[in-house]
View 1 (cartoon, rainbow, N blue to C red):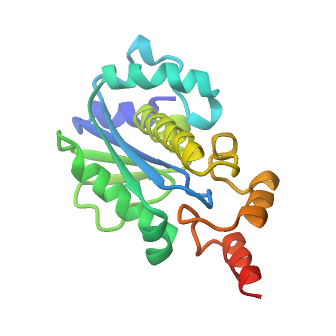
View 2: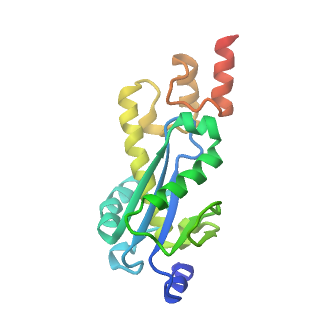
Length: 205
């Protein structure tokens, strides 16, 4: 699992930052992007670390403080629904990744990203296909971003009752679609997304 990242470390490119996001496909709530520099990618405490989507909610919550202990720097960026609507999710995501790396207290010598190359990145970087499954630093960023966003959505569930945000975390589900039809589109929804745009169009009709 560690071959790509370990080879970069062996080449003297440390410190290496991993970057990943959570909530790209959701139609409600922020996009959350995290960047992480691990002290030791081979730490025994990180043996269960993998892509956040392969972990249960409880496993992610257990790993969250461990990653904080094992990291020498972590940064977290939130991108609002308004910014996503204005810039488009892909552009907003790339800009958020740049900002997450810039926000790190320790400047990395190399950056690893999951799938997408970061245009305009000054620091040398490498986009890895399914990087959150093969590079520990990206996996760590994936977990940090996912847990942070889930907690935000749990808080929004209290502020916006009836939408079921704590369950589906703002993603497009049958229950979420029914709630939007019944309760309407709120400011937490991404109005540039097709399903939300359709709901708004129906309200106009």
